[in-house]
Amino acid sequence: MLSALRLVSEAADLAARRHSGQQRKGRGNEPYVNHLAEVANLLSIATEGKDAELVAASWLHDTIEDTETTHQELARTFGERVAALVVEVTDDMTLPKHERRRRQIIDAPQKSPGARLIKIADKISNIRARIVPQPNQDERDDLIDYLAWAEKVVAGCRGSNAVLDRMFDETVRAARSAL
Image 1 (cartoon, rainbow, N blue to C red):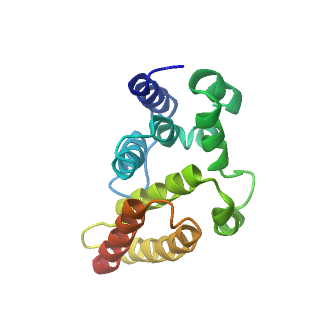
Image 2: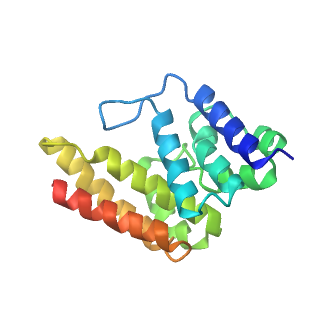
């Protein structure tokens, strides 16, 4: 098994390579890897750096969904727990957006503690990316829509980590203030 530092570093490297060229919504179309770094950092803070597998999984959380990466590849390279966490937070991209969103709300309470933490950190990052100075009406509407949905998903994830719950609440307050 890889050392904790090497596990996280190799996960970050693979995520950056697989998401190369992808851009993030919001924040001026910054590189997608910035989102992954933010989610990983949030989880590192929330766990005080004590769960390298969770942080590695957070770097990789969108690889199956958005790239050609497979569960088997992740399990072989990073171990079964990392791969299982990534699979657990992966949406079925063959479904329409409204159905994927509905399933996230329904499935959130049944997720493992680690998957719930990744979901909360992911929502924090995605809300933050939608907070822009002087938003136009489309940006406001997008933030309002995303915020309402994210709060429903996170409601089913709360209670696993007080630090992350607090960060989510602070992010929601900041988003509302930006509207």
